[in-house]
Image (cartoon, rainbow, N blue to C red; front, side):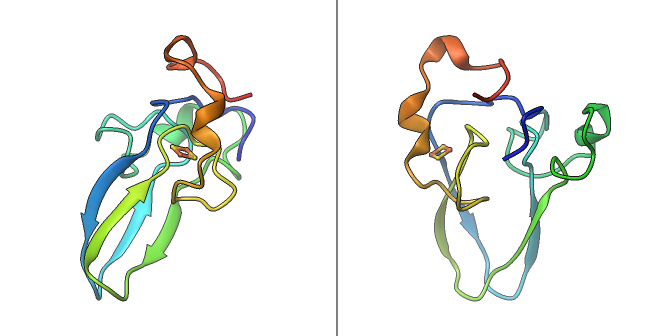
Length: 95
Ligand code: FES
């Protein structure tokens, strides 16, 4: 997790990812692509190293729960850490 990341949402987003594809998942919380896929918005962050997107190579087509609070210890997937955040935390920096 990057301290300059922004909480995009306080719950995960279910997204179907397809086998054989690589995806770049937003870790900075600023992507305008529903906060899921990197759109280059991390360029606005103060720490362009840890806020870079997380590349995932998918081996099995299925629905994955993408971390939208940008605080999971298993990025880019939800690990339940989002329960820490409330609606008021959305759009603010991660804690
Ligand atoms: S949405 Fe981030 S840990 Fe669940």
